[in-house]
Length: 170
Image (cartoon, rainbow, N blue to C red; front, side):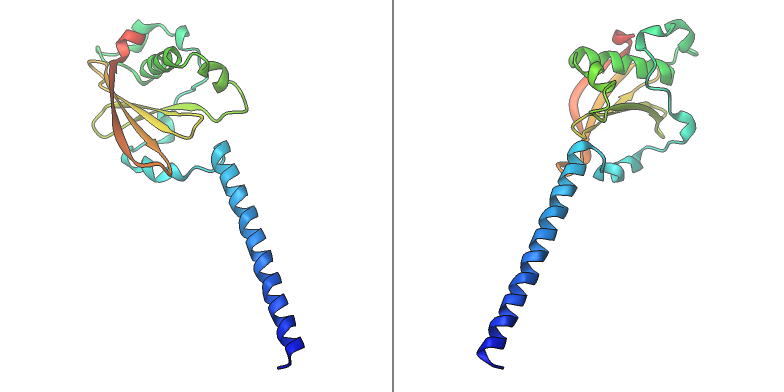
C-alpha cells in the first residue's frame, strides 16, 4: 500500500466516524426531546403492581366539585369517583397552577383510578415532569398514603412519607 492510499483510507475512516458521531448526537437529542415532552415514557414497568381493566378508569375531565358526596358513598365506603375528585382537590390545593396546566396541550398531565388486590383505591397522577404519583386510599377510612416513581431517576415505587385523609378534600 502506498502512502497516498494509506492517507485516503485514513480520511475515509475519519469521515465514517464523523458521520456516525453526528447520527448518534441527533438520535440522543431526539430521545431527550421525547422524554422531556412526555411522549416517551420509560415507566411502564412500574405499573405491574396494580391490576386494572379498562372498565376501572374514570373520566378525569369531570369537575371535582360537581359530585354529590352522599350518592358516591356506598355502604360507608368511598367510591372510585369520589376518591378521584378528592385527590384532585388535594393536588390542586398543593399546586394551584396545575389546573390550567392540565387543560393545556403543552403538558402531559392526567389522573386515573385503579383498584389493587388489597381493595384499596389507587389514584395515579402523572405529573408534567413525568413522575408517577400514586395515592393509595383505604375505602372505609379515607386514609391515604402516597408513593412516587420517576422513570430514570427513582425506578422503584417508593413511599413519600406523606399521608392525608381524602375525606378532608370532598
